[in-house]
Image 1: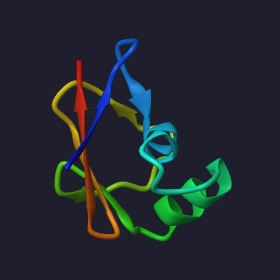
Image 2: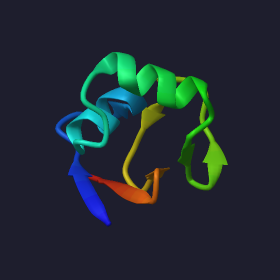
Image 3: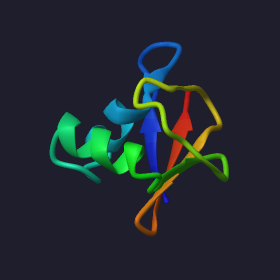
Image 4: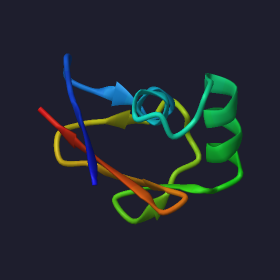
Length: 69
């Protein structure tokens, strides 16, 4: 499980996917999210701008990211 340390109160879902290196660009993140391939805390996420906060867990293509403060 990879972790992303927050610099501010939250990070947007698309940014988190890019920061973790799971997608190459914002466009790739957009399509992955729109296609229902990304889940946040076990629920499919369809909003690229969804705000992730401390404790959230993102899953995409067998990879897991935990958001920490």
